[in-house]
Length: 120
Image 1: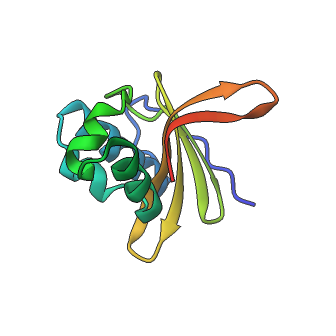
Image 2 (image 1 turned 120 degrees about the vertical axis):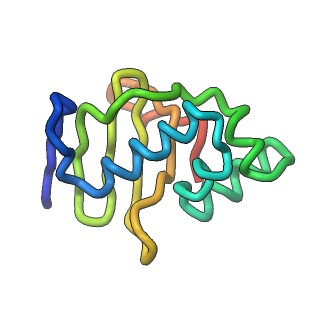
């Protein structure tokens, strides 16, 4: 198991998963639904479209995802990762074409699994 902790104190984040998470949150901040959806896992895109009955590019912007903010901590466990900003937690997985967000807008529930508004 590999654990990567990163801070945003001006240094470059070492994990590719953290970079994917930052690009996702930046796209949300810019209201660029198409760019945000490109960073979602395929099943997550499907779930977003089903829940909103709209194409991902418009539906993702209605999901109340806390926008912006740099990743302040990233933990990578093989092909899965968790990235935290100051306002949100996202979960990612590595696919053939890179790291993708599988869940976002996640809140910690103590001993229970995270509760995520966007998930696949």
